[in-house]
Structure formats: C-alpha cells, structure tokens
Length: 205
Image (cartoon, rainbow, N blue to C red):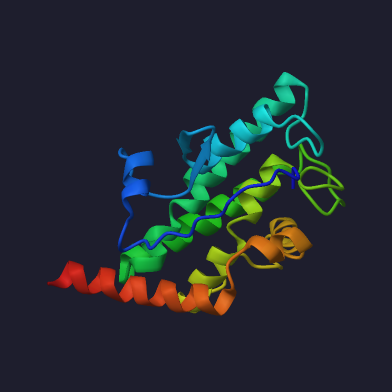
C-alpha cells in the first residue's frame, strides 16, 4: 500500500529457520519485519513502525492524537478479543470451542455496535474511502476467518448479524493489492487442516 519495495521470505512453521529464531528469539513466530538489519516482530508493532518510517501517502493513521489513540484501541481490541479466541475455535472441541465461538461473536458484535460511533458509516472502510491502519489489522484476518469457518462448519462473521464488519472485511479482501499478497485460499486451507491434525495428535499422545 505504501509502495515500498521489499523482499518476501516464506517460512515453514514446522521447521523454523535459523534466521527466524535469530530475528525473533523470544516468541519464535511470524511475522517479522527486518529493516536496515534490525528485526521487529508482532503485527501491530510492525504496522506502527511502517507508518512512522514511511510517511508518504496513503497515511494509515489520523494526525489527531485522540483519533489515533482510538484507532489503536480498536486494533488492540480486535487483536485481543477477536483474533485470540480463534485459536480455541480452530483446535478446540466441545464446550471449549462453543465458549470460544460465543466469545468471538459477542466481541465482534460489541465492536460493530460501538465502532459506528467513531468511524464513518456508509464508506467501504473503517478509514473512509481508503483503507487505513484498522482496515489492515482487521482485513488481514479475512482469509484466516474463512479457513476457520470452513474447518468448524460455522459462520463466525455473519452478514445479517454484523453487516458492517462483514462489509469491511469483504471490501478489504476485494482490493487488488490484497488479492496479490494474501495466501491462496485452497492452499491455506489444506495447510491449516494438516497443522490442526498434527497439533491434535500431539496433544493426545
């Protein structure tokens, strides 16, 4: 989106490379951004760094400090209250999965109800006509949400229940730049199923 040239390095989650462990020895996970030889990890931190380092348009964050803080608030809310419950939905069973799904739906519904008070309604994105920081945070999970929905056979983000969040996710997924950079869905699904089966097998051994 910023027009910055970069090198994409794909990693095998099961066989973590020496570079990955070198760049992120604490969490040992992706994503990692390496800029001028210095690594950064964690998606929200990376996004903030990109915005602070490359100040050319499009600007992902508002200039007003209060408005900025609200964007950070909702990005953190989505990361902690929506993304986090997806793990037990993905690998859990029975009551564990049901509880996580109820939590996910409740938090997405809360987000939709409250966020309309702070962001423009009737626009394709949270940010208005163009995607911004919050759109990237929420929209980048669209493929993962669809994969988890397919695995568990339940619609997590429903057009009737949360039409605005659904429309924002859809608008972001339909961007040309998103289509060019997001994982191919069928490949993503197969890898997710394989990883889930291995994870479940390891917990029952």
